[in-house]
Length: 328
Ligand code: AQP
Image (cartoon, rainbow, N blue to C red; front, side, top):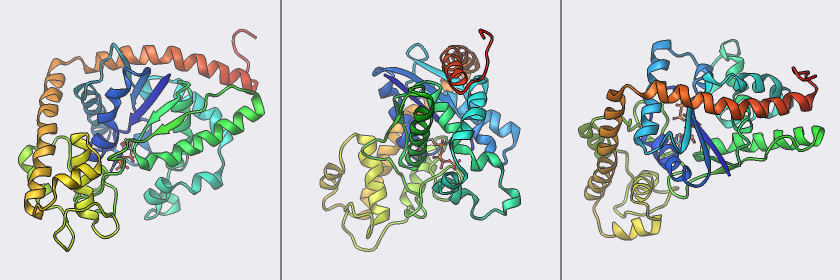
């Protein structure tokens, strides 16, 4: 079984990225052949300072290692260092259509405040590159948070379309979304996803522990006093329950039962304790990894390994569509 996933270095990683993606990755490295990358080409789809992009990319690599990903078990690499991604993108863009790309929620959310003249083609065509990322590794499973499942569905449409035309060339991938924590919401507006670009409602993985506690203690809650999972009427409390349950690896009913009779303030304190218990040792590991100075070497070695797999698939794709190669 092949597993592939990535995170784009567009900003400081959040607790949402951690619970929805990062934390789950290590469980996959013992289940199959695992490819985890830094989606740096995707980070160019919105303006970003080159220095910030470089430092975010290194940070994500260090976070991968700190979360328990082992380069001996799992290939860790930078997307831009494996040129097959850009080449596959150039071919596969012909098999996804304007209508379907313009219906993507992420595109609509990110572009709705922008003028057409300012929307880069890369933002619009984001799912094409994402399809290339997945298909180059013949990935069967793609662990993601809920927000990315629509893009995986589009990749599946592409596979059907492509294989119908050329035979069984591409492998059908499937999204795997965690049971609890697939969508962590903003602490300042729990009806919105916690996202790297939402400064007010985020917990950042690099926040110090006093800041983490302060942010959770001042998270927006709801009227009433019961600690209950009810997204419609109690989105704030529900979000904090999800965070707690995900970090304690329990289901939502168990979390609800645990907090029966708690007051909001004590409940928030317990959630803050759970987050600190997870992030404090994680940050220590991250700092040790940064100090080791080995991150770039690990990424370069990973890119070499990833290229072997990606180039073989690219060759298969090129052959299928009729592009000549050196053997013809
Ligand atoms: N709030 C979230 N809850 C659960 N999972 C989440 N993910 C992101 N936010 C949450 C998951 O993290 C992985 C990496 O995401 P990404 O960086 O590639 O893109 P994204 O989904 O667009 O993340 P952000 O934080 O919202 O980034 P920006 O602000 O740059 O748009 C994915 O598996 C995602 O599902």
